[in-house]
Image (tube, rainbow, N blue to C red):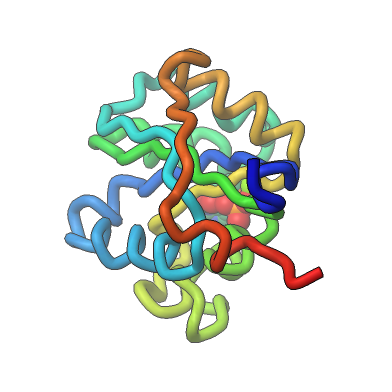
Length: 160
Ligand code: IDP
Ligand code: MG
């Protein structure tokens, strides 16, 4: 086993939301994750039932935008993925940028691909706890694929 395989590999749940599908941005957004060096561990193209969207956003229940975001997430098909790397959650949140494109930094996914104040292309887990909860909503353990990237020593390796 190489040194980088011993490093704790964190997983995060990423969803390309309905606007990413309809606006033909899936490939370009996925490229950001591949280019950064994260490893795809699972993927499912599906329409999220409203009840599942409510469970997904349960932490926001009672907030003024809750019903709207449940409707948005469940309105049309989405691409649900698990991406993996050491620090995958924080790396992904940085790639995504601030919640809405109108104030997300250029260079981020939300900053480069949108300016909406309501639709924001992508979901990413915000903590190890939410990642575990969210991954469990969409994937059975056997649907998460365990494999090694051919170039992972260069992507994740350390020179010590
Ligand atoms: P995040 O996606 O950047 O983690 P959260 O604050 O966790 O943002 O909110 C979850 C989702 O709820 C957002 O991605 C967005 O789709 C929606 N949302 C958050 N705040 C608002 C709002 O003020 N108006 C409308 N929708 C919102
Ligand atoms: Mg959030």
